[in-house]
Structure formats: C-alpha cells, structure tokens
Length: 223
Image (cartoon, rainbow, N blue to C red; front, side, top):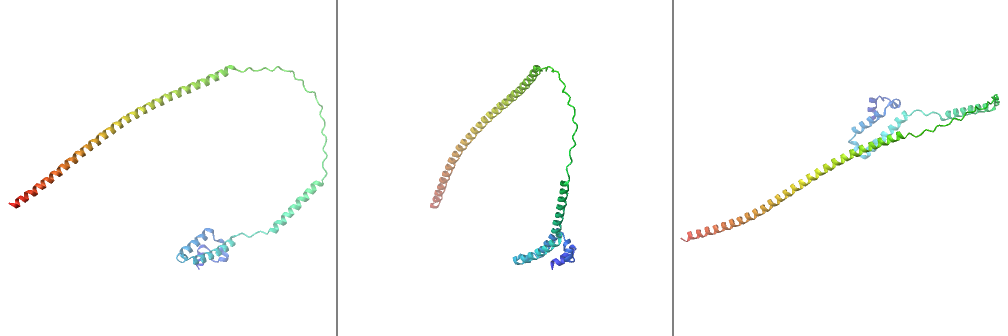
C-alpha cells in the first residue's frame, strides 16, 4: 500500500511500464520514507523481516526492468566464424602466388683505396698551470672555511663561559636563600618554644588565681 501511494510521486503510475524509469536515489528515498512512517511497527523483528522481504522483491523486479536486453551469443559466434574463414581464404590466395625473382644489380667497378700519407701525431702536454691554480683555489676555500669554523668555535666557548658564570651565580644565590630559610625556620622553632612556655606559665597562674578566688569565697561564707 505504501509503495502504491509513493510510486506516483516519482512518476511511476503503472509499475509494469514505468518502474524501469525509477532512479537509484529515488528508490532509496522511498525505502527511507516507508521505514520512517512505520518506525513504531518495525520495532518488532518479525514485522521488520516481512517488510524487508517485500522491499527486496520489489527491488529485484526494478533491477530486472532496468537491465539491458542480452545480445544473442550465437550471432556473435557465427560472425567470428565467417571472419576466420575470410582470413584463411586470403592467406591461401597469397601463398598460391609464385614469388617474384629478384633482378640482379649491376656490379660497380672497384677503385683502389686512396693512399693516405702518415701524419705525425702531436702529443699535448698536460697544462700544469691550470692544475696549480685549481689547487690554490681549493686551498684558499679550505682556509676560509677553517677560519669561519674557528670563529664559530670561539663564540660558542664564550657563550658556554657566560652560561657557566650565570649558573655559578644562581647556585650561590640559591645557597644564600637556603641559608636564610634555615635561619627563619630555626627562629620560628625558638619562638614557638618560648610561646609554649609562656602559655604554660599563663595557664598555671590562671589556675592559682582560680584557687585563690575559691578560698576567698569560702572565707566570706564562714564569716
């Protein structure tokens, strides 16, 4: 029922004729709308399975209508056979023709080779000047690189010395701070001890005062 109501929206008025015109995207939309409309019913697994079977049947019909008609294999085979026969016939015709006899070419008169007079080969002496110049250039380049590396090394050493000095300064400052902290902790302990002593004396005196007050009250009652 859902498919019959949804098909006309996608131009499928007669499923037998118009089903082949349905596009894959449209078919997905139809499936989604049916599943969304019947979401409550499809919570049950049995109902879900029945709905899926119906949709697969319709999908098979739709794919069958969309598939192009298969060509006859027999016609192809017959055409191939005919082509093979024609090729064989042509080959036999070519082989039956007599081969053409080659025409002899006229021989050219051979002339004696020209006698070449031997020329003395001049050996080139290797140019020592160019080699010396290239060596000097290489040496100069190496010396410049060595100088630049020495400068970089000096700068790195100077930076390391500065970092060491800063580290030493920071170590001294940390030591001073630690000493101050230790002094403060010792003074705090001593002050605490003094406070505890004073507190004890104060409590003892308070007790004595209480005792004296009680005695005074007794004396007053006796009078």
